[in-house]
Length: 168
Figure 1: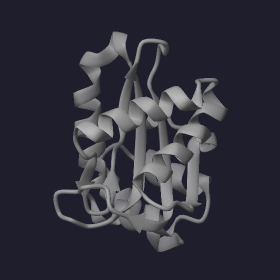
Figure 2: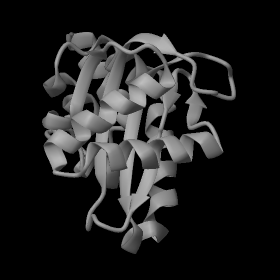
Figure 3: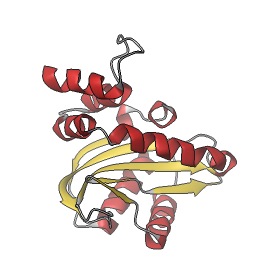
């Protein structure tokens, strides 16, 4: 998947302590900036501006804050599991504990919506969400999102997550 191809263990943050949405986005921006060389204030400002124009909570405890950047040439993705769920304006009203943050290059803006739709399809699977909530390490998160590389292509992402969860 295009988004997960741009996700590495260095931008997976588990059990991040926050006081609310602004605090969460600020801390995520700092962590992304530390690993990408981007300015953390610029990352936060763009994420907050996007969040202010419409909530990025998508339901089932998931939010996908995102921003477009002229200064990057490839997408940047991070995954954060919050220690305590917070309200993100999700349509179902559920507080969010799983946050996928996406920084997208302006030159590739046309690929953003298909990638976002693909992410939403993956996290729609209850077993994927459960696995992400139970993961004990960034390696486990990567295994859930990447799927078992030895698995055959016929197995669905949901089946791979079920296998992973049962091994945990």
